[in-house]
Image 1: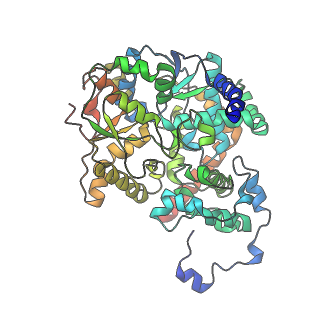
Image 2: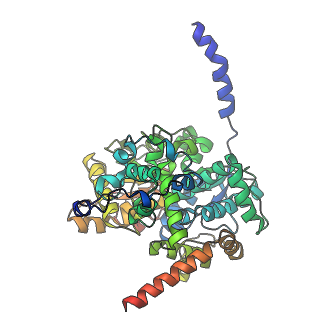
Image 3: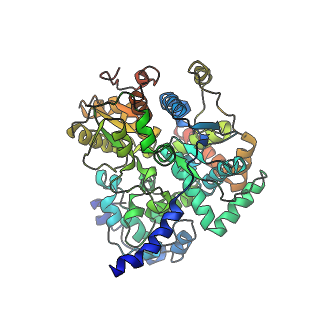
Amino acid sequence: MDDTSEQRKQGQNNLKTGKIDPKFKYEIMRMPGSEKVHLCFQCGTCTADCVIARFTDFYRPRKIARTIQLGLKERLIGNEALWLCTTCHTCIDHCPQGVEVSSIIRALRNISVKNLGAMPSIYKIFASNILKSGYVYLMPESRLKKREEQGLPPLPKPNLNDVAKLFHATGFNETLEKAKTMENAKAEGAN
Amino acid sequence: MKRLKKQRPWKMQKLKVQIRMAETKFLFFLGCLIPYRLPSYEVSARKVLGKLGVDLVEMPEFNCCGFPVAPVDYELALSLAARNLCLAEQQNMTVMTLCNGCFGTLNEANKVLKKDKMLRDKINSNLQQIGMEFKGTSNIKHLVHILTEDVGLEKLKEFVKSPLTGLRVAQHTGCHLLRPSKNIGHSDNPEDPIILKKLISVTGAECLDYEDETECCGNTVIGVNEEIPFKISKEKLEHVKASGAQALVTVCPSCHMMYDFNQPRIEKAFNVSFNLPVLHYTQLLGLAMGFKPEELMLSENRVKPTFLL
C-alpha cells in the first residue's frame, strides 16, 4: 500500500477523478462483516496494533479503509498487499468505531478473486484439495495406516458429493477453473 | 448501600443465564491439520480426555471447517462450516475441536448465521441442494472450554497424580480462541488471556508472563509470504526465552507448527538458537496425570523436550 518515492515523483499516486468509483464503498458495505467501513475516521489504531504492519511498510489497514471510502477501486482490487492479513482480528477488537477491518480485507480479497480470477497459488491448492478429499490436505496412505498402529480410529470419510455441490452452488468451482487456466497460460507464456 | 441492593436482582438474573449443565459427551471435530501433521496432539488429547471421563463421538462425514477458503470465497467457507454445523444439529451434541481455526470458524459461522437472516437464507439455499438446513441449535467448544467449564478445574486437580513442580512454561493461547471477542464468548480476556494459564497452573507447572502474549504466530500467511511470519515468530520465541520459560505450551495445531516445526528454519534464517520445546497442552496435562512421555508421543515434537523424556 505504501507509495515509493519514485511513484510519487512521477505523480502516479495523484488522485484522478476519472478513476474514482463513488459506488465502490457501497459494494464493500454489502459484503458480510464490512457494513461499517464508512464509519472509519482514520485514527490508525488498526495499523498501530497490526502485527504485519509492524514488519512491513507494504501493508497499512488504515490506508485500505480510506482508499475504499475514496472509491479508488483500481488501487485495491488485485493489490498483493491484501494477502498479507493474518486474520488475527486484533483490529476488529480495537477499532473504536466498530469497523471490522479484517472482514473488509476478506471482502476485498473475495472481490479480487471474483473479478480477476487471480489468487495466490496456495489457495488454489487448498480449494482443489477440499474438492478432491474433503480435507484441506491430501492424506497419504501411509498416514492413514499409521493411525491404526497408533490406536486411533479410522479417519471419517467426508461426503465428497456434498462438498462438490456446495462448490457448484457458490459458483466457486468456475472461479477456481478460471484461476487454474490463467496460471497454466502464464506458465506456457513463460516457457 | 442502596445502590448495591438495586444491582442485586440484575446480578442474579445474569448468573441464572450463565449456569449450564456440564456435559460429558461431545461430538469430536478433528479438522485437517491434526490428522495430517500432528498425531501427537490427537493421541495425547484422546488419552487425557478418556481418563477424565469425557466421551468423544466421532463426527461422521465432516469436511474441512471452511477456514482455508474464507479469503477466496466467504460464502463457500460459510457453506462448508454450515454443513458441519448441520451434522452437529442432527446429532444434537456439543461439538469439540482441538484446533483454534476450526473453533473460530464454526463458532463464528454459527453466530453470524443465527444473527443475519439474509445471509442465513443465502447459505440455506446452498444447503438445500444437499438436503440440509441450518437451524442454529448447535454449540461449539474448544478443548480448553471443556476442561474449564465441563470437567472443571477442581476435578482436574484430583486427576493430577505427579505435579510438574519446578517446571517453568509460557503459554500461547492463539488468536482464534480470543478474537473477535464479540463472537468468541467463554469469558476469556483477549488482552490478557487467563484460561490457559489457569489450566497450566493445575498441572503444578509455573506459567510465566512475557511480552506480547496475545500476538499472532503469523502461520496463516506463510503460504503467501514466508519472511514476515518468520520475523513475527522469531520475536515471539525471543520474548518467551527472555522470560526464562523452559517450554512453550500451545492449544492450536497451526501455532504449534509455527513454533515447533518451523523453529529450526527460523533459527537458520536469522542465525540464532532457541532450542525451546513446544508442547501441546494435552501433553503437559498428560504428564501431570501420570502418563508416560512415549504414551503422549513427546518424542514426535521436532524440538525435543529432553528434560521431560
